[in-house]
Image 1 (tube, rainbow, N blue to C red):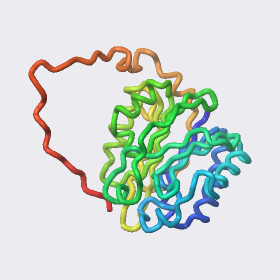
Image 2: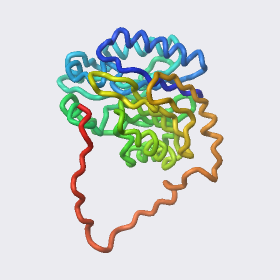
Image 3: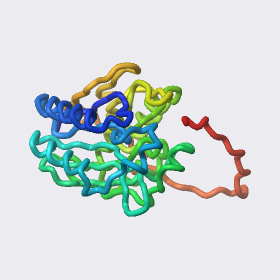
Image 4: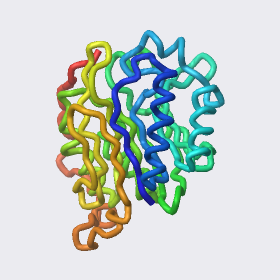
Length: 276
C-alpha cells in the first residue's frame, strides 16, 4: 500500500475552493499509486475560524462528506480528513476515513480538545474509534493533540492498529510534537504514524508544518518542511522492511508495578499558551 499525506494551507472558510483543491490532490495521490490520502484537522471549514464552526458544521451524511465519498470512489483512493461535525445541537472536531470504494470506514470525534477555542467550539469525544482494515493495513485514527497522550495510541495498537492516521493543526512553536512525540508513538507501538499538519497562517495563527510519516523504528519514512505545501507519498513496504532487532518490544515486555512509598506528591498545573 502507498500512503499519501497532504501538508496544506488553511481553508480559512473558503470551503468550495478547498473541496476543489482536495479533489486535485486526491487525483494526484491516486496517480502516484496511493490508496489513501491524509488531510489536516478541521480542513473544513477551517481550524482557526470559530466564527464558522457552528454555522458551517454539517452532519456525517451532509454535503461535505457525500462529496468526499464521491471523489474517493472516482479516484479509487481513500481520504482521511478533519472537519467540523454537527450532530443535533452538538458540535465535534471530527475526522472521517473514507475508503477507496467511497464507504465511511472510520468516524471519530476528537477526545483531547486543545486550548480555549476548541473547548468553546466543540464537545469532547468520549471513545476511540474501532480499528479497521484498509488495503491490508489495520488502521486507527486520532486527531492532533490525541497523539501526545501515549495511552490513546497504545489502545489502538492493542486493538491491532499498525497504521495510525493523525490529521492535525499544530501551531508553530510546538515542533517537539513532530520531532519527538510522533516518532516516539510510532516506535512505542511498532506502528506507522502519519501526521498531516497545516502550514501558513489563518487569522493570525501560524501552523508549523513538518508533517511526517514515522516508521516503527521511530525514523521518518517521509517528512515535509516547515513553510510550504507538500504532498508526500510513501510505500509502506518500507515500514515492513524495518528489521526486527530495532523494533520495539515495549508492549510485550511492559510490567506494571505499584509504588511502595505512598502516593506521589501532586504536580503543580502547567499550561501551554492558548493558540487563540
